Image 1 (cartoon, one colour):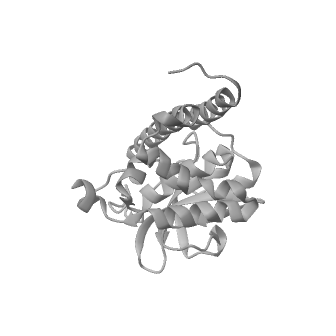
Image 2 (tube, one colour):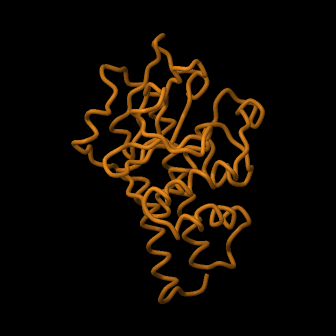
Length: 228
């Protein structure tokens, strides 16, 4: 690799810091406490799955750092990711977040893990989802979380949530982002970002940067095979 200087070095350092941030923990903010799921049971299997997802997001962020520092090294997959986040960088506030939701929803086609991997549940790394162009609900959500941090959203303002759809559509995974003190849902089922409090979702698990708000249980006491 050629020696990095000037803007290339700054871009490399910036994205590398993003990669390190994925491996860190976020503080519990005072305005989060009202959102916490009360009296639920810790689920170690989900904790391990989330930790592995964070590790792989950090690895993908490092790949993007190298790509941006030396564009000739970029793979087709990394360039596709750049296309997803490019338009969002020109926007601000809610429009910026909405652009990520829209771009990921358009770039990825919904396909179950059984069809893709012959597995009950598999959480793909973000660039793996981009390369395949397919994924299920948690794959959309994980890709959105990485893209949101890539455009500058702070890690403590991001969560992966496992929810129960009260309308009878089962267990689901969504990315959530805090904007102006309110948590917005980025759902692969919709281009509209809704306030969590105004949806028909009941929160089963909240997964933050350090897993500190991890809690998950269904009515039967078991994690649903739809997501876990």
